[in-house]
Each structure stands twice: as structure tokens, then as C-alpha cells.
Length: 97
Image 1: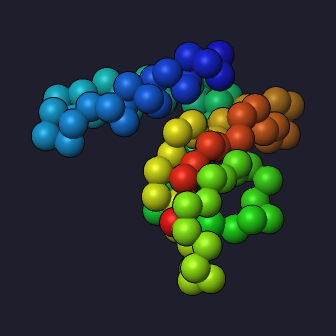
Image 2: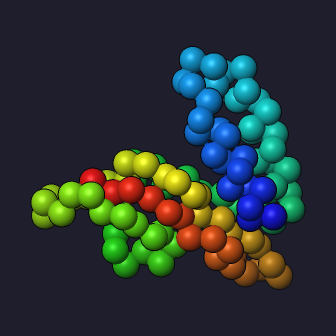
């Protein structure tokens, strides 16, 4: 299932901004159905990067010492709720600058 979720995420990111409006409802419905099955998909785009965050695998392009932000997300973080526990299924793969 994580490969299907990742493919949906990639398709969503490849759609140009001006065309996205016509697909927005479809993506919301897909993510809603995934949540009903216990999956949580997290897009960490534009969040501050924290090297202690175990749910993110980062490629750092600029180590200037300033606060680093996630500038691109190649794969989202995916969790699965099982028996009241949140289990990490996939780490996000991100670009940090």
C-alpha cells in the first residue's frame, strides 16, 4: 500500500498549480479513504528541518548554519494506525536548504 500512496503523492505533485483545482476534490477523497483504512500521509514541505526527526530522511543542499527548511518532498511520511498505535511505515525523503 505504501507504494500506491507514494505514487498518488507523486502524481499530485506533478500536476501544475493551475490545473490542480480540477483534481483537488479527487485527491481529498483518496486521502480520506486512506485515512479510513488507518493510513496517515504527512507532507512535511516548508517545515523546519530537525535532524532528530526519525520520520524524515534528508538530502541537505546547503549547510550554511542558518535554519534549514524542507524545500522539496520526494516521498511523504506514511503512518498506519494499528490497535491504537501509530506505526511509521515510510520515512519522508526530502531536500533541505
